Length: 376
Image (cartoon, rainbow, N blue to C red; front, side):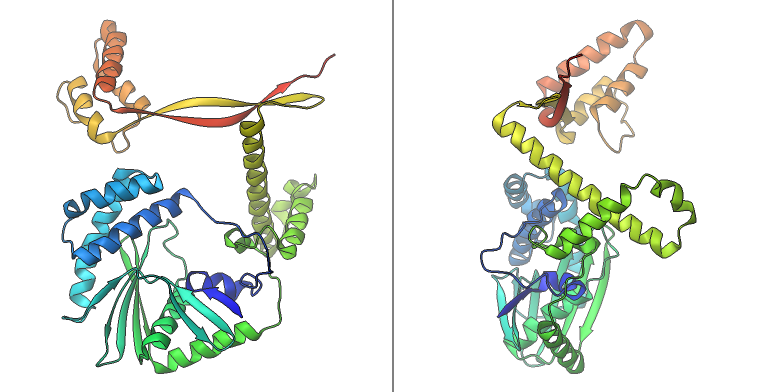
């Protein structure tokens, strides 16, 4: 039986091979810094719902634990959670029926529908069994705030309606980056149509439909459709004349070319990452004309909460109008504020004070260094 995750419904509609897995097939875990931050945020907001938290201060421990678990910025996570608490209060007062039991990010929900098994995690929901109606909320923390979430919300609505025999579902999408809400209302007719469409999707002949969405597909490594698409993309963008032709290409070809270019760039990054892992694992890789080694650069960044008092003192008590507290920018401000003969001394003192405060965090970054070993 085919299995579709509600969160992948949009991808499934673009390519119906994305959810048809072969036995033993290697799947790709699509991860990113945004995804890690989203995981941490969802964990904290689940606790916020359970605790009925009204301020971000009530969640300090949860924020620190989630940030550590996902290796994300505490400050960035706290900022998102603060927005989430504000949204939670407004949504609870507007959409959630009083006196109903609220559920936060339950374990996996699953429903067997004609032709497939549908699963998903719902961030926050409450059910009015008397009215046979549910309200659910889905938090979105990514930067693509204009994405189409209706396929995913339709799948969640089907899950709830199938499991609890509901007549209607209100799904609310909250995009945390801009604070906007999207409300999707599913009545009996909508739910019937959605179930029919899902069955049509499950019964459709297997068809590969490669495109930009391949980068989000867990089957991308084993997919023959993507391999052919990638080969075409490489062949297209490596033509010597293609850049000169762009100005005269029809608009539809320009958009296709751009999609192909993005696919080539992603593949190049994947190969570069694999080469970095090889050099990190085995050490220097020597070829007939070059040797690849690992270059390590220790990048320093400031902890804003620890650095801020030091910066204010260094600037003579003046509160700096800094939005992004970067070390280089702080040093420039301190040197500019110091007398001409005291600039070096002021910079040295700044570094010492920041170190004493524990405000400087050092993070190693790795890159490949290519050394030409060709002999004349």
